[in-house]
Length: 392
Image (cartoon, rainbow, N blue to C red):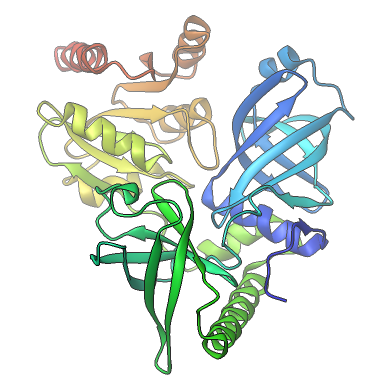
């Protein structure tokens, strides 16, 4: 059966999911009694998993070892939920972490979807064409494959799929899957998601063709499962990460805005880097780096140009980093790399005074609240800090 199970109970399969979340730097939705929060997952080792949560927050929630936590997250676009036990707290490589047991069961919470197989992002989405009752020919991309239908998005991402299709509307689907397999089938609109549409096969679809299509899904699932087994590390995520980066290049710095003075932003959030670049691009240049490990200077030197830090005049450290904390990274820059550039830490406005105190103690010039993001206030602070140091 290719129909995705409502429950995932195999230990290795569950750990594979958790390791993929760690690699992606995904966030877990965590609930305890009336408390709710979203926290980045850090690691798993078969016995415990850890997510980034300040110890003050752990205490504020009133968490005690053995308390039950409800987790929610997405893996390959599928939604899962589970219950784990709180297992204490630790400081892991300078990051305050909350520990929990590895779940024994994962339950899918989106079984209504026509999504039995979702390829990795590295796999190119299958192009598709489909029609509506007004005989318009529409270009799309398949997001999810199901035994009973497909999920698609429009190739034109700026257009809302609800503008071209209606609930219950009939559509003729055409998807080239392989050299000898092309799926042509009548469908109806079953549901809408986040700008996607679920198309369910009708009774008029060719039964023999659907069987070939379902066999194709099974083949794709087996290939993906084999790749998952090869990437899995029984000793835990840290070993898997070390193995994956051996001989491989670390994430490279990207010049988002080419203008002097250039600021360096260290963050795992692509959307935040892009938004910051758009907001300050008329006044500052911006280099963004998804920092994982190693000296920062060496990873930006080529792009920065020249010796030392080159064109870079300031370092911005976002509070969302993949494998370390912003305070720890700030200390590394100041104490180990001898960075003389002004450093600003960026985060939420919650406990802003306390975070500013910790930031300055770690070697930063200041702390800026960027959640919520106030463009004018942020630009003014960046400008004031640069002028202060240029005049020093």
